[in-house]
Image (tube, rainbow, N blue to C red; front, side):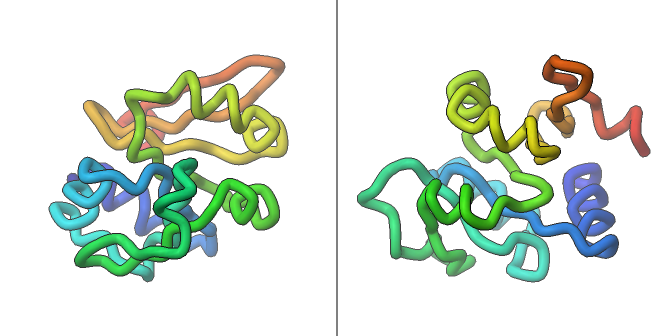
Length: 128
């Protein structure tokens, strides 16, 4: 919790835009446990059309489409669906190529980016 919130707060202080990805119960648990509010996340992206236009319970984050994500790509994406990392990266490889980064919250906070033609993973503790 501490590492994730330090990273997110530091990114926001430097003016970065952060979206969440995956409007699931797992996402809601992390949002509530870490007290993530709209001063940290701008919205949540989800691939399931049945969720679009609705809001996350408790936090009231708007659930947006991948089209919204593509039209207004954020600097960082907090990946709540990290167990689907490969599939999500495959769907959004252009986002990484354009300099976007994924934040994986568990088991240890890490940042996924693209560098020199390959995906790079860095633990937050190594960056701090």
